[in-house]
Length: 207
Image (cartoon, rainbow, N blue to C red; front, top):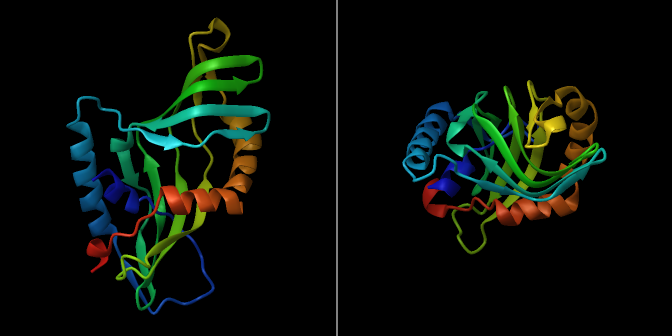
């Protein structure tokens, strides 16, 4: 159920190729996200974690990172399915976590070095990917195109350190960290990681 929910974490992208057919998928997305959220909240813990790779940018590094509260996933824009040709389609839209929480085992930020939590009042990502050979399980593959983090509102660093117990880091992260990390998200190595870790080839889902 969790991976089916991830199929729907998609965001707005522009492609020079005109789709054969474009379908508005808001109702389908909202229904599946609702079912995913209900299933997630029924677990013993209300945190459903998504593992995030170690990240380093703008003199800041995050190691052993988990994105929590995945049950709060919501659609933040219209979501479209573009049927490009037989067995090839693109899912696109913008999504947000209404309760954003990142748990970091080792965070290096300015003079701070240790475990921390990050929370935000507002966040969103633009994510887009193609699914090729959707009706051929052995040949089906996911090709990520866009994975873009947008500016935060009210991003807080929370720790047990008295100097970093509750620090607003929004301005610095938006100005320095996000541009560098989005550049990393465009690299071949990161997209290769996404293609493998977030492979959404569910032939039964698209039949």
